[in-house]
Each structure stands twice: as C-alpha cells, then as structure tokens.
Image (cartoon, one colour):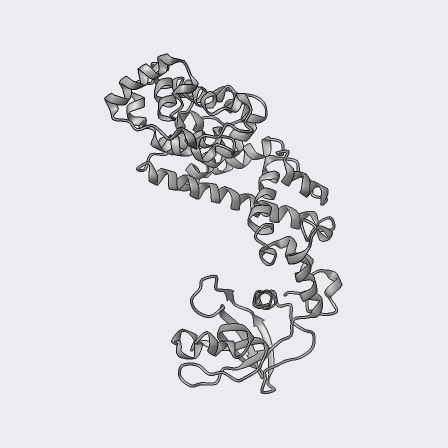
Length: 404
C-alpha cells in the first residue's frame, strides 16, 4: 500500500475537492518534489506545498499509518527534521521530529478504483496485466516509452561490458572477445563460454595467431573438450599447456543436452578459433563496420544467427565503446544497426504483438524484452508508463485531478 501511496503523491493523483491537514488547514500541492530512490532520508526532496496560503519548501515523508513515523524511528533521526509535510492514508496519531516540533500531517485516501486497478495489475492471471490499455495508447506515448526501454537495455549491456573491461585489466579488445564468445553460446552455454573466454591467455594465444592448428588446440584444450576432437589436438595442447602453465576448464560446465549439433560447444569454439585466426574478432575491424552488410562480410555468417550476434554482441560493444569514450558516432551507429534488423521472433515478442503493439525492428523487440524482464516480471507496474496509463486513464477523471 505504501508504494501505491508514493505513486499517488508523485503523480498528484489526489482526491477532488479541498485538501486539509489534520488540524484543518488548507493544503495546495504545488510540486510533489523529487523522489528519493535511496534507503536513507525522506521520501521526496524539495517539495513545494502551500498551507493556508503560505508556501513551504522542504521534504515530504509518506506512510500508510502516521504511527509508522515512530516505528521507523524518524523521531530520533535529524535527517527528518527537514520534513515539512507528513502524508499518510491513516492519521492515527500526531508526530514530532527529533527537536520535538510537531509535523504537519495530511491524510489522503487512496481511491478504491485505483486500489482495484493496481491489484488487478499485480495479481492478474492474464499477461501482461495491462493488456487492456495497450491497444488504445497514443502512438507517440508508445514510441517514447519504447525508446526509453531500448536505451535502458543498451545501458545494462554497457555496464556488463565495462565490467568485462575491468576484469581484463582495461582491455577493450579482450572484453569484446569475451562478449562475442558469450553470445556464441546462444543462451544455454553463454555462462560457460564467458568463463572460458575470461580464462583464455589471450597474450599467449596472440603469439600463435598465424597458426590455425595451434589456435584451435589452445581454444579446445582450454575448454576441456579434447575428447570431442581429433587426437592430434590433445598432443599439441599438451605442449602448449606445459609451455604456458595452463589450467583447462571443467568439461562438466558445458551443456550438450537439448543442443543442436551445429551448436555443440566444441563446434562453436572451432568456429571462434578460425575467426580469431583470420582476425575477424578484432575490435578495430568491428568498429570499422558501419552497416549490417559490413558485419556480414566480417563475420562471414548469414541468417538468424548473424542477427542475434549483431543484437547481442555488435550493438552493445559499439554502443558501450562510444559511450565510454564519448564518441557519439558509435552510439548512433548502434541504434542504426538495431533499426536495420527485423524484430526477433520469440515468445516475448509474440506476446506483445498479440496485445496490439507494432513490433518491426530489433530495436522494438529489444525494448519489449526489457519491458518484460525489468518491469512485468518484477511487478514494477508503478514504474512503467504503460502501467501509469492504465492506472490514470480517462475512466478515473471523476476520482482524480489530472497531473499538472
């Protein structure tokens, strides 16, 4: 209930008619303030409220019951002395701050319609729970939210890639190789491929780049999958393992069950070895690619697999590199690539299409994957713009003032 109270205050979905404090003074909410998303301090900073015509600028704290103020020990915390308004749904008592000063309290009910709609979002058996509102949303609002989600997803992938840069001692080249390797696992072996790539002694491998056989031996040997290939690789790896003091992975980390033969780990690793040997895993080569056609030539892969590699490897790498080095051209190129590729065809995308959304490009599908994983699955309807439209729709005008 407290989350819904926060939502009501943030969006000024306040009851019609006069608002009055518990001691009868008139209240006008000029600005609800800035939401504090940390665990410390009042809920909203720099709010502006008029009490009997006098403007107060300060912080606002929200609780379901006024007595929660004492239950959370705010009366002993000086950080809450700046609170100018205590907003509650049940004013069961008057409260004071650490200096003994009484805190102005505003009791606001949460409309039954809003509570009912929120409950339907959280507990609905239909997925997504806001499906009824999606088809009627203005195209501009849908596009705006999709664009935001797309950037959010790219930023998450950027954060993951920057962590890999840190783990590889600042090497963007190695971080790109790890990212490429991870996505060669196509989900089921993604973690194992990343672990394998992180363990690869790339400096030592570089000395043997011109010899495909030695690269293959190093790659397959470090994966612990020598029993899956010809015996000659085991002999070559034994020599290289002794030379560089290498420790192979545990082969039990690889998954073969429910994997198609062309996607078997040792098959994919051999493909990566050839790409590395031919210098098609070079970051500089990737950054020189400006179109999907350029990437097709570089990777020498066609079809859906190429699209997935572009979406999950090329685009995040180019975007992250551009954002980290403040090179906007690369960020823009990442978005252009997403728009040049058709939307992914998976259960998530098909679900949103059934709800009435127009999903055409990989940018659209990536946005909707972000929406499902970070909002729907986590029941973060109050942070979702679709959820907001559902909760503050036209059918509730008789209950609330529109947000200013």
